[in-house]
Length: 180
Image (cartoon, rainbow, N blue to C red; front, side):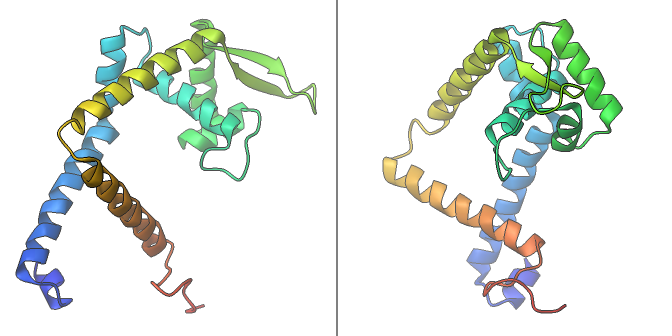
């Protein structure tokens, strides 16, 4: 709080930032521990462990280019990279998903020696059911918010997320840092 006030923020704004920090900590902790996704998986009665579900969503992000320059076929190496795991752990997750019928392995079109991971119809169905339940819960969270409040929150949270990325990349408000 003292740092915020030293930076020229009012005591009210400094206190609001402290409350925001607490809320973000709890939100982040719930995400890291997998509480939210775990509860949704349990509510859906799915036979997936949280790590396996993360594997499915990682394959989806790779294939669709989410957070990447472009979509591409998922490989064990890309799965490991996306999940921030070593390749042997990613390989075990893929093997579990294959054994449960969520993923198949196929030869890559560009190199028959390389395997790619493909989501099965079962995986697509599970991901769709998860997405529907997640959105139902999200709509419940915002049920008593006005459309204007939702739009403002979205804009401000997006601004916060952009700023977080910018600051942690070492860029100033004006642009990339020139301190090289």
